[in-house]
Length: 429
Picture 1 (cartoon, rainbow, N blue to C red):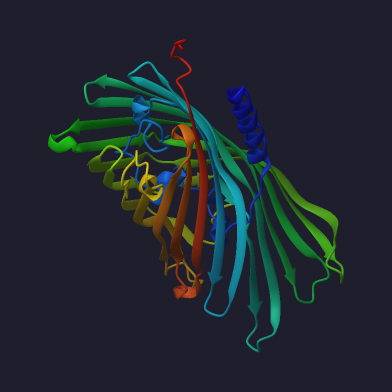
Picture 2: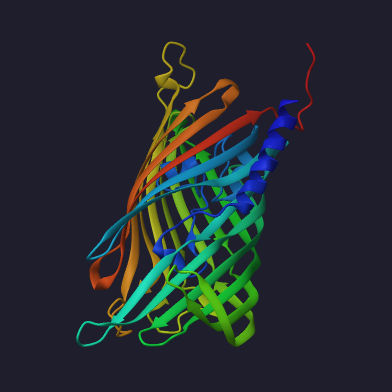
C-alpha cells in the first residue's frame, strides 16, 4: 500500500513539474535558458561532486555506474527555492522563485546492478530585458523589450553494473522536451506603430551518457575511488514558427496587432559537444568522504534559430571544478540524534562558456563565471529514509563592461525514501 501511494505521489509531481514555469535570471536569454544542475540535493550540498561517489541508498545523477552499488529501492523528490539579487552599474533588483528539481526512483537488480528513472527540468526561460537608445541631446529615440518564457525538461533511465571486482560501468539515456517563446518588441519615437518579432519553438532531443567507477578498500576501512562520465555529443532539435508584425500600443499598455510583415517555419538545432567529467575521492563508508571533480565541454553552437544576430555574445569552452564531502559522526548513535545527522559542504568554480560584449562594439567580450559555496544536512528518518537540506551562496557574472552581476542564495530540499528491494523475496517468520 505504501509503495502504491508513493508511486501515485511521484506521478502527480511529475505532471506538475512538466507544467511549471518559474522566473529566472536575465542570463536565461541565452542558449536553451538558465540551466539547472543535473545533480541531487546531496550532491549540490557537496559542491556538486558525484562522479567518483556512490552510496547504497542515494541516487546519483552524475555517474550511472554508481547504481551498481544501490542496495535499496529509493524514491527521491527535490525542490529548489532561489533568492536572486540582480545588480547592474546603476540599479539593483531582487526576485524569488520556487520549483521542483527532480522526481526519481531507483532500485537494485540483484547484488551487482541497479536501475533508476526520473524526470528533471534542465533549463528555464523567464527573462525580461529593456534596451534604450538616446540621441546626442539625451532624448529617448528607441526602446526595445526582450522577453522570453518556457523551459526544457528531460526524462531518463540509467543502469549500472559491477563488471569486475571494484569496477562498475553504467549507461544513461534521456529524452529532452520543452517549449520556448522569445519575442522582441521595438518602439521608435515619432513612429505610430511598433513592431514585434515572436518566435514559438518546441525543443526535442536525446542523449547518451557512459560512466565508469572504480572503488578499492584499503587498510583501516579507507576506500579510494575514481570515476568518469562521458555525455556524448548530441543535438537538441528546434522547430516552430516565427512572426514579424506591426502593432499599436494603447496608453494603458494593451496591444492591437495590425499587419503581418513576415512569417516562416523554424527548423534549427542546439549542437551540444561531448561533456567529460572526471573525479577522485577518499573516505570511510557512512563516516566521511572528500572528493575532487573536474568537468569540461567545448563551445556549443546553434543553427536556424533566434540567436546572435548582433554579435553581442558568443559561446566558448566551459569547465567546472568542485571540491566537497560529508561527515557523519555516528550513524547508529542511540544517545544523540545530532550524531546521526550527515553534515555536507563544498565549493565550486565554473566557467559557463558564455561571453558577452556589453560595450556594443562586438570586440570586448567578458566571460560569465559562476562561484558557489554550499552546505547541507542529511536528517535521518525511520528505515534509512532521509530529509536533505542544502544551502548555497553564489555569484555569477560581473557589473564590468555594462553587464549584470547576480548574487543568489539557493535553498534545496529533498525527501529520500527507502524501501526494501522489490526483487528480493520476503521471508515470513
